[in-house]
Length: 294
Picture 1: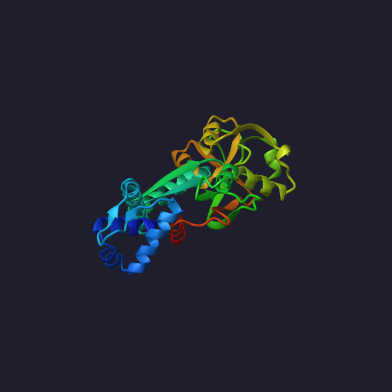
Picture 2 (picture 1 turned 135 degrees about the vertical axis):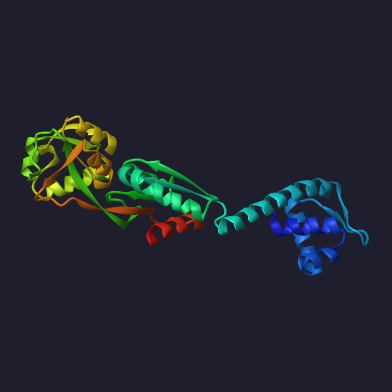
């Protein structure tokens, strides 16, 4: 297989019409240049240069190869230039994935700050449930994830990032006391996020520690987003567990109320999720550092 070095030597000799001048330009010895050309000809199985006199002349095959070789070298040089820009983070792409809470309430701010620092980096964000984000990392479809729960995965590393708190909210007219116990939950209708969401996983684990199984609850609805849970709650369809960040606007607007659970701690970590054994691009490394420095 021909190398870029061989092709560059051939083009330089052809342009200079002299091995001596080409050697000077390439900072090589003349025998080294001759060796590169000879290796190229052996690879192709054709003679490219006539060496009958002091001047260099291309064979018919050499003339055809010269045109194609120039294009190959131009493409290669453009690629190298692009990589140089990429190293300086002037160009690049980061594919991000996040579960609902970090995807809607955290990532946009971090992306905006990062874009100010590196405007040439293109960023895409996929919002899905935690399980789907982990799958996307494993399939190498995204570079970095941010999720609200850890899952069992041999392929993904979870790094604690921020602390969030899940709260129980109800409609302002929903008949429930301001403070209840875990056992009291069994007497009310519950609106849950879908299976696979980090919010649901955290609530399930916390209740299990209190001896309450998910099947013990009267789950009347399973919804695909935090906002839909809040909407269901405002319609007095049941109570729902949501991130305090997500509930902030609804609480301030007075359309929902928080119900304290005296014997349940629902604080959780938001995690940065990275694929294991995957080479980090400079863009991914820069975004990760931006997150952790914040």
